[in-house]
Length: 392
Image 1: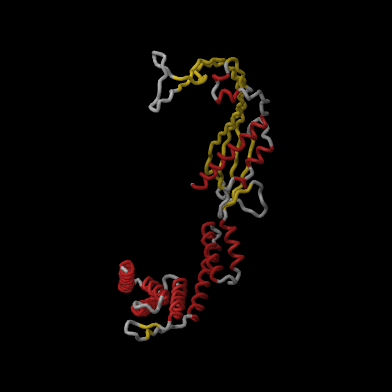
Image 2: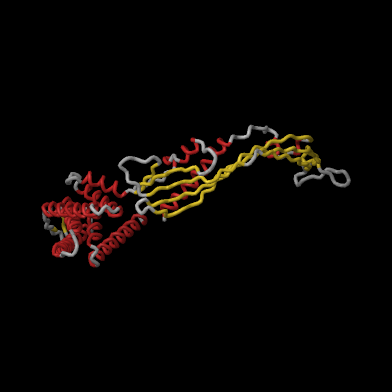
């Protein structure tokens, strides 16, 4: 019984608080908030003892919102400094939408049980007229921007055409103009590789570096091409000049490592000085590791070879025919193979040393294979350079 009474008290307090918030919203001019709160409560239950209050608040907030909106529309229609077609159109749409949310709630009664009547207007004609005005405005604004042949203007025009297409999909030739604005707004960038060294760069290396589908560099307004395309006017070019490719000799390093460690060689029971067994708290004999010294000689061999690639990445603005940036690119790749032989007590070996005994000599990679392996690092560094340039 106490729990039920407590629940009723909490429910009443919550309901009163909600009404106060709704009334404050009306008093402060937040009519949309008051309308939303009232509709939400009335949709839940039109028959509870607070529904009359919410019905009165809904009528009050709706009429004030409609009056202020129509007054605002009247001002916007008279103002000539800006095109206000979007604001006017959206205002009529919101008014119509709110009316459509209220209509299914009728009939409503106030606190005295009297019917609350709402006066609804039909804004259909206004919406149609203002939608046409808004569409005309978007079309004119976008086509004017598109005619400047400026990339930034073309991008703004594209956004306006998208807005127009969402508003009126069949409006004139909006789809074709949107495509035109997109193509005019894209930065097309041509990538080229140049070998300024006296060595041959394998075709596989070029293919890997120029595989820009793996770079994920393209964004909505940027496209990278490695092969010039007809009818594309390029805005920028990136030239990657390989200036140096240096291979180290095939090296073989050998060393002899003397190992000496204490290792565990079984267990024994601990005894005191008198030769008696030492017991724990439960009376059990205490055991300890038997440590012995183990030794041996590890004969380690290391095969190694390195390649260092130097390049310069030049970024050109083709519209001004100027180099706008230059970046150094250095990439290195090292081949290494370790293996070993051993003489002595194998128990002295740790895991890494024991693993070396499983290895064996291998053929050194060719210069071409080294360059191919180095190409992944080159790609990563080239991508960082291009991302850095895009962010400038």
